Image 1 (cartoon, rainbow, N blue to C red):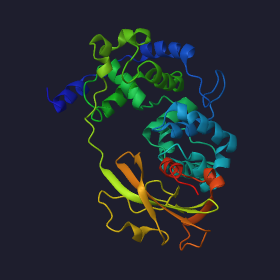
Image 2 (image 1 turned 135 degrees about the vertical axis):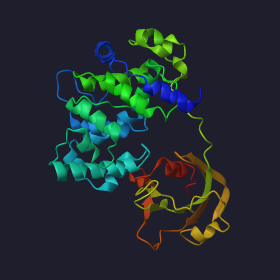
Image 3 (image 1 turned 180 degrees about the vertical axis):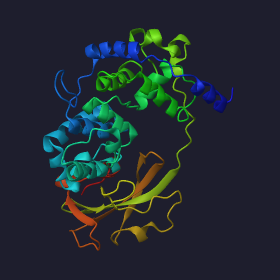
Image 4 (image 1 turned 45 degrees about the vertical axis):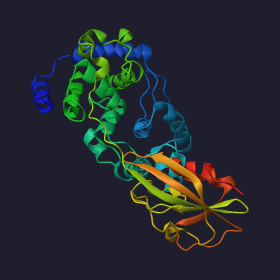
Length: 365
């Protein structure tokens, strides 16, 4: 059957009325097996919307293991949304360095400022108001509304899509099936404890209903899982074949002084790695630069060896050749975006992972 016809067949069916029993079973499982995470509230306590929001933004396209440490450091340094809103953006970017997808950090800061200015430092409770804030999309708004404010909202991330596609044996590939999976999830959300239910679905997807080898034998929803009954659970959700990422190339210009200072440059606020510090480079292009030196921050005897650094972004793969110039001492560079930083203070800069890779390969004098 053609994909479009299959989608029509599946999505035209009435959505099963399974919210009561399945949600109760899952919540009982969650009460005994929920993960101990630093942003979660203890039973009987009131959730902190600030902690919920911060964790959800950090968890976008990042694993729980990585986020734990970053979350704890952020909360220690900025324990309230007001303190985060008043922090300099540079400091927020420095603390964020290593989490990737740096637009999230800029939006995090803007969002904190708007919560303070528009809502008196109190997070709004409705999904619509939450989505009006920078960096809060449909999923994040649903998660905050459900977890922080006990609103009966669905929070559909990749884990939840996987659980629901298997539960109902949805055989339409993503992303075409997204709206149907969302509708199925909304039907499952109970009126009581919707926040716990949202987290239970996330935990189930992370710990049992895993991408490649789901442990169906201990799954609390195994008895109702159509994907398991059809022996296709491990193949779901179906996804389109990924296209090959284009490769971009460039030259990174590493300037160091004899007393171990390095020249860095601040990237433009908008765009990829916006506002972060970088080792100056040529533009990143699918075509080789005929004369890379015209982009060098200084003239001199550049050493261009065979050292290179590779890094994969969401939409392309990057390969940068490293050129190095050693000079006696720091000297003025035209433009406010440049800064000399001592080697001992490099760790304090807002450097993305790519730039840390470059510096790790540097041949320090």
